Length: 421
Image 1 (cartoon, rainbow, N blue to C red):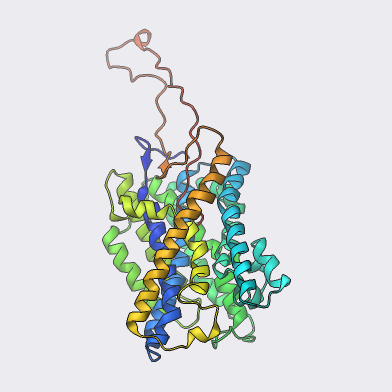
Image 2: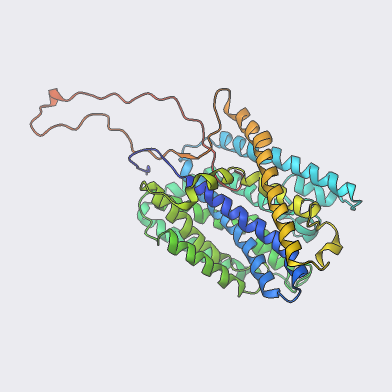
């Protein structure tokens, strides 16, 4: 069944929400590096900060599914889609990995080919070794790209499958995905308790299965896809933007109370899905949201580059977590705020440079000459144009004049504000 809409629309809020997701991860990683240095007893604050980052990744995954499903119809050419995803992800990923490798060599760090090669090919999450996925990873946040690689690989088929679901049954599909999200942590308990996740009392294998195995994280991506279809087919009847935002804050507070480094996905995925769908529905109806403001949209366009560079800046910049001693060295509140401000500024500046000098030129190569990379996402969900004019009540069949369909050049594939945008 085709989506229907009276006119082409833009959903700039999706780009703005992408920047919010980046901020959640960035502030979390900066915070967990500094909080205990300022106040060693502030364990609760540290936990909230950590869970904020976990929630940010869930935000990325749901938003990616929503954005891709909103933009691409069931006839999307799989090869072209994969080529554009590769153009978005691989050049920036390769550049950042080389930078991280050179910086690690410069500090005399011991490197391992076994730990580096899986990250190079973004397959590290399939290996249940925490030194490969996390501690030995030169650019740790690339674990999310390992998940995204699976999302992109199966998206053309998943998109066709989701679009075959009758609109009145989309809610059933969404509830089924939520039930599977609830089941994943329960299945994770079947894994042995040891070995433990470094510096925690959590089982590494259980954490890996629930939080890092791409197949399990695919559920959040699928939930976003279904939500996009529900909005597009006018089947979404969730709360508005403000209520959804408040529910997201409540979801964060609830996830903090759930034990486990990577637990609480359902508690945050549900309100975040409500928030994304509420913002999209408002703009779909011609309204506006704060997430679609020009500054947030512009920052959303550099979020992928900033995401991939942020851990490198935290590791080798003012915070300097690459030095183990820096994790416990006492620090004043003013010093922590200063380091945080400089780090965030450098991350955003390098994210912009990466977007302008690497990501966008790579995308232009896949578009061909003369096709610019738009700043804001155009979302082509257009109501079919009737082949003939309506017949007036007293008109005869002979009086009906055919109206030819306008011939338009094909539009370039839009840039989706997902994890790799």
